[in-house]
Image (cartoon, rainbow over all chains, first blue to last red; front, side, top):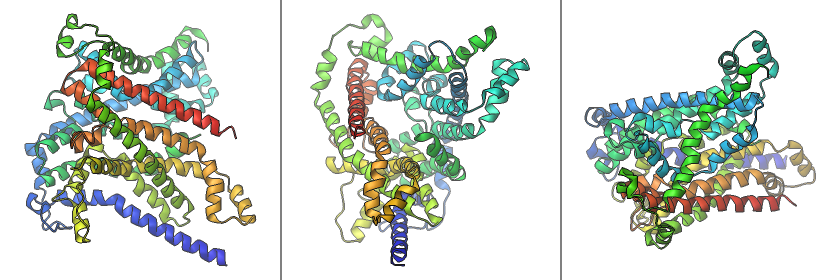
Length: 275
Length: 295
């Protein structure tokens, strides 16, 4: 009885501590959203208002009418599409490593994993020089190529695809299907769980992409939302409501997608992250 | 595997990814090493005949550059303060969530994970507003509690800590999930046995949970440390490395010298110093981990 009471007390304390911490964790988001609907004169009021005096969409309108955010959005979506393509390449490589025996397989796979250790600060200057040599700086292709495939994605696909029974593949081979058709028509559908997670992560990664567009794009025409927002911050440092609208516009789609798919994302780490 | 097509197939499947990884991850290392011994700049970029070998001069210069030394110091500061903070916070949150029995505790997983998925630029913009000395929420809260305002981003040491706090906020989520996954892997029977022996919750945590989490803690500390060594976006957006280079990180130093000053050779030398640090940290941690598991 006594230990039961103690346990209950502990549950309450844990709940209260987590609630307080949780409030602190979402506070920046709440402040960001509320401020984005305030006027520029209201966001610098002392004392600040919590709830906007009158909701205004002026800041959002401003982003699209005067600030090129439509162009940034278009570029960001193009990058997202490319990251889906990159995910497909990762899946192909994962399949190659999972279901075939070939010469040099272990060595190549080790090399793939080793690339995870290389910091982007080491590669960013040489990659810029390489793309410059290929005349790809300041092009969309130059922005997406360096981050198109990733060792971690290949690794996760390989892990999942090794669990697919060989019999399924053998059966389609006997039916005379080509290797590539086997991959597209049999392997990909079976790999739906991992594809779903990877697609969400590819979307988030593409949507948030910052470093390569920052380095490769000399031209505002190729800026992504992230780069555009950092430009906005340095050019309109005092326009906090405008900045908050830009930040909200970037963050909200991700938060919504994350909340819808949080189970898949969190479970992905739970099952594949540490085993 | 029969037939010609099937023998060629694996290479075709892995070829696109391997080519891209080779060109954009492996080849760059050799290119970086090569240009770090040259005076590559805009003139060298335009015409390679302007390049000349200068031996280890870049390395000597960069290691005696006061800004680079400051950046190294700051980066160590981020690592030494940041890594334990991230581990402690995410482990505590994970333990509390894992011990909770009510359904509400699942909601906390989402709440604490949320900052991890959001865009670092957007988040840095928001925090710069929160930290603003005149109009920011944080100083307003402090002042309304009759505490003195804090120069969040305007005093070199405080600014480093402010950046760490923001990065901590973003880092907790993912690491918490890793810890929760590891916690759920500990067999229930261990705790039941300990309970029979009369061990209380605290004893169970220190005698069972923490030792069992050794690998997760190792994994998190390595990835976190490498992350801090590459700390870039936060100082880039919020402080541009200032005040007085007080938040300049090694990564930001490399970016600035490479892409704002176009001293590619010099920046490449700096990046190799950083790379060696990353490798050294990983190896040392790995050795320590191996030693510990000998027990």
